[in-house]
Image 1 (cartoon, rainbow, N blue to C red):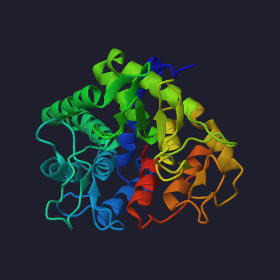
Image 2 (image 1 turned 120 degrees about the vertical axis):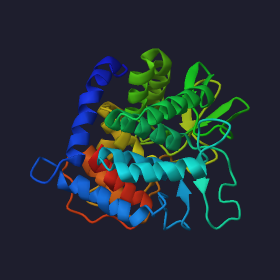
Image 3 (image 1 turned 180 degrees about the vertical axis):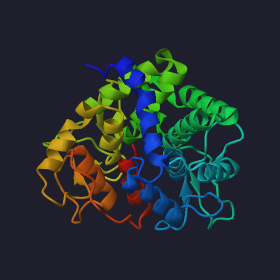
Length: 336
């Protein structure tokens, strides 16, 4: 049975409004200090003066995903100045001229820092969602129009009808061919999709949401019934682990429970909660869903923040990780 989107959409605005108030109120007015301080520390550690969110542990590159994280965290914290700066850099450096999507990577070490024009759908979704929230918060018509253009491009360019389903591609090129479609379930950002449906109508996004929910429920593999980072949909319409990627519940899939819980879809991640509940204090960073092989090292601080959220535990009094991705997960887990 699918999620009752009418109730989700009806509750979306007040829930996000509450989050925004928490992020911008002054001390003594109910602000969650940890969430606000995490954004401030994240901004100071990873956002440079130009508005570029820097992945310092990965050659100093930037991603549309990271720019989206920065924009979303900024608007949730009520930091309009940071939002404007991050958005300005994103448009100037990653915005495509031919379509309202964004190149996925900026590498300052290259003569052409944006050598690959392909997009990453999660980055586009995060940017489009953040712009919609910023437009609502600060009543900016330009941001509202840009969000609408991004949503329209995602729907037109990144959703294909194949094998009886509406499939949200991870990128515009390279993921569909010869009867096989490759998907990344962690790109199903449920609160963004719900916001898109509230803005554009359930008739536009409802089929995408319904099929994505069904895919996540099917993509439960191995003895622990876990999803993996990448899956394939073949002619029979069934989800199986991608043959071109390690079949791991790992770096990408760690975001599945974060977005599902933020989107009020706890039932989608019950097997993940059951798995983590049995792993003690240090779950492995990844597990092969087919063989059962596990990483020899534990989850990052960001991963552990998601574990605690998934298991209904209180956030830990922790420092922000020095790794960009882990730190982003820490901040998002507290903000969403």
